[in-house]
Length: 80
Image 1 (tube, rainbow, N blue to C red):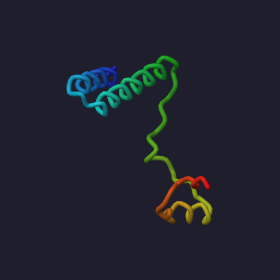
Image 2 (cartoon, helix red, strand yellow):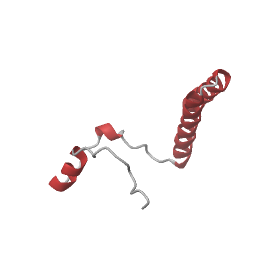
Image 3 (spheres, one colour):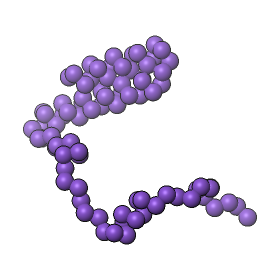
């Protein structure tokens, strides 16, 4: 309930001030509140936050992909 109320307040604040970002954050917070309510109604236990989960070991080639920066330039090939 708390998330839904905070979200509604944030959404209204965004509408009044013209801040689209605040409005969308408010809507997202309301969706989180609704998801929590549904999980509680269904008796589903919430998962631990991702920060508390153990990190999955990745193969060395996958780690290299993540650490290498992409070269600057177009993201799509240009038309001939």
